[in-house]
Amino acid sequence: MDTQPDQQRIVVGFDGSPEAGAALDWAVDEAERTGCRLHIVHAYQVGWPIGYFDQPTAPAVEHTRRRADQVVAAAVAAVRARRPGLPVTGTAVHDAPAPALILTGTPHTRLIVVGNRGAGGVAGLLLGSVSRQVASHSYVPVAVVRGRATAGPVVVGTDGSPAADAALESAFAAAEARHAPLVAVRAYVPPATQPAAIDGLEATERAALDASLQGWRDKYPGVAVTASLGVGSPGPMLINRSRGAQLLVVGSRGRGVLTALLLGSTGHQLMQHAACPVIVAHTRTAA
Image (cartoon, rainbow, N blue to C red; front, side, top):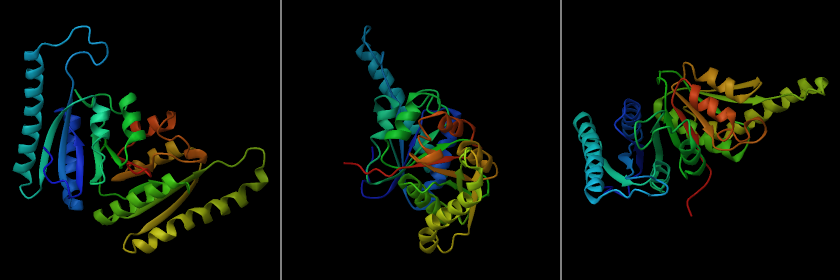
């Protein structure tokens, strides 16, 4: 049960798999780093999610519920044993994984953390519809833990859209908390029919990139920032930058070459092949 509703929290989806264990470890570090409490969520279902032609018996329901409670209790106990000073709670939720995680996105939730694979409630999070649902409909940032976090920079993709501004906010805060440098990447594609305009377009894109960073530089003067402008698709560019990075931050929507980043092939490529954890920032607020 979540017994400290007024303190900012990190929520992590956990199903007992090795990938979920890596997500839990990352979430523990993030909670300590940011001064948040940790809340562990295990989603489980009984019977067929659609149709219910064969209704589960009461003993089967109770058995599944108890197993889910045991998974949560073991995870909470393990965290408390390793980090006794970290406030940690947990809950087992009888629901599909995406709604179970999305509904934790209250104003007191700083971040939702998931692994890149799963054995149960969060299985297929990156490769199927659950990933689209969580990344697209969460009201708070979502961290997908994959690859290995290094001592490298925080990398953020930006394009001047409101979603990119949310990504910059998350990225600057993450870089400050980690005492890490920040690399801001902006990608653009010159029009093939106007080669003479390439030089002017590059100057325009560079000015837009610098302008988008200025306010955040002022707010976070201790963060060393590198502005990187590149020609091409943002997906491969960000994947390449993720090698040697400790964190990659992107917005949930974009314009231009970042449009529909998470809903199309570029987004799936990024989430499947990034070499470090990925945070998806959001601009929406809960009603």
